[in-house]
Length: 207
Length: 207
DNA sequence: CCTTGATTTGACCATCTGGTCAAAGCAACG
DNA sequence: CGTTGCTTTGACCAGATGGTCAAATCAAGG
Image (spheres, rainbow over the protein chains, first blue to last red):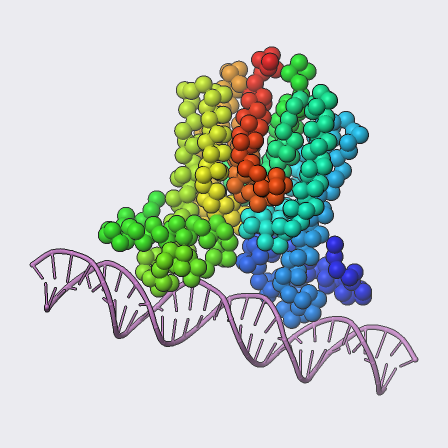
């Protein structure tokens, strides 16, 4: 998804530094709130130097989003139609929750983009994303039809997983404010496990 | 939560028009992405005229957020300790979902604010919001302890309601892209009802 | 219809910000 | 150790943007 791979060592280092700085700043202040000066400073470069590596502010953002989208979809791609239904779905949820914990900046970058109406991502959402979700929703729907999990609306099940896991990254300030600063993740993991487990179970399985 | 109530008819009308326009523009582009010119144009005023009614861009934003917070907390405030536990929680969820459908701009305005680290709302989150949530969490915890609902982590239950309902407003573009433009709300309501119902039920109640 | 206070605006300003450019540094290879 | 091409930068620019202000306009009571 990245353009031509960097050639020299210096290029590799500086492009990486810029993307890291861009991730930080874009996630923190949104596209418009981010300034090239700030990104450059954080990357340890001057603004013109940054623009030597990326054509424009847009270009940094684009690159970030493209890389991110891949990373974002990977866990859903990994949902295995041949696996044990409940394990597969719960593993997907857990991987997404882990991503919120380990890559909150990426989550917020994406959230910013969607909130603003996905001006730079709309095609990917309507293309790759929709295709992938439809495909996996069909798998989950198949499991439900076969009686291997309780009947569910596959699309909304997937939305639930997105919403519940990303909430802990995107609304972290709020969650921490309410919890008084405590780490929300242990509780979140237990709770989400419980929620999805019960909704996927058949009544008679519950103990 | 609003400052001194407007005096004249003209003031009432123009302040309202500015807040309506501000809501639209701030929700759409975030605080930094919003421009006074745009807000003024949308309100049918000139920029200096807008600044006759509000000291600054900040002031418009502040007023909007303050009003919003009240509206946002109302449904949780309404959760009645004396009510039937499951009905109370499900009603709260339904009211929040209705707010996502009917007031998506407010939801996105709030999401923007939190995403950026709640620079103008932090005190309210750590004060009023935390207090209210702790209070209602205690109520829910009491219900669980009394065996009137299945045991739950009250704080995370509340986070779940926020996450799942607001997702449909904040990530509307994504949801609609995946669903191919269809209205997500009927499906969402059924699914969320099902999710929360099952997680609050005791196994032996399930039919 | 004129006075008074509320309302509106055109002109203007300072600052910020994305982006350009020519010149200067610098690394490495022949 | 000088040439060559990659890297870095200071100076600069144009447009956008938040905000000011004095003057003009307007509404309504007396």
